Length: 79
Picture 1 (cartoon, one colour):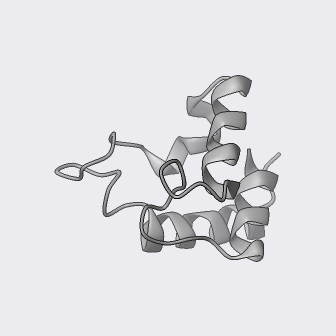
Picture 2 (tube, rainbow, N blue to C red; picture 1 turned 180 degrees about the vertical axis):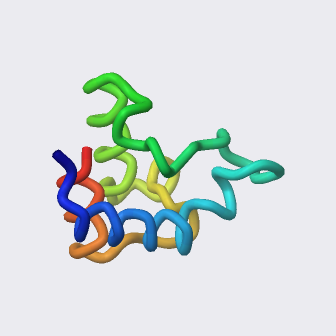
Picture 3 (cartoon, rainbow, N blue to C red; picture 1 turned 60 degrees about the vertical axis):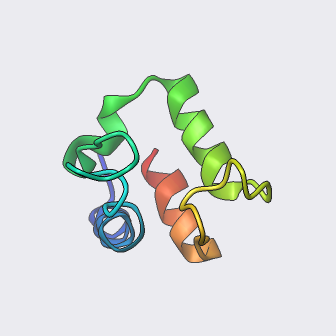
C-alpha cells in the first residue's frame, strides 16, 4: 500500500507547485492528484520523474521553478 506520509507530502507539493497549471483552466493538462499514482502506466510515471528531475528548463516541471530533493523523493516513492 501507499505510505500515508509520502501521500500527504505528495499532495501538499502537488497543490502548492502543480495545481495552478494542472487544474481546470490551467495551461497544463488537468490531473486528478487524488488518484495520481494509479492514473498512468509505468512508462508515463518514469516520464513524470524525468520531467521533475531534469535540468533542462524547456522540459522541467514545475515550469519556472523546481522541486526540492525531499519533494522529488516524495513523488518518486509514490510512483
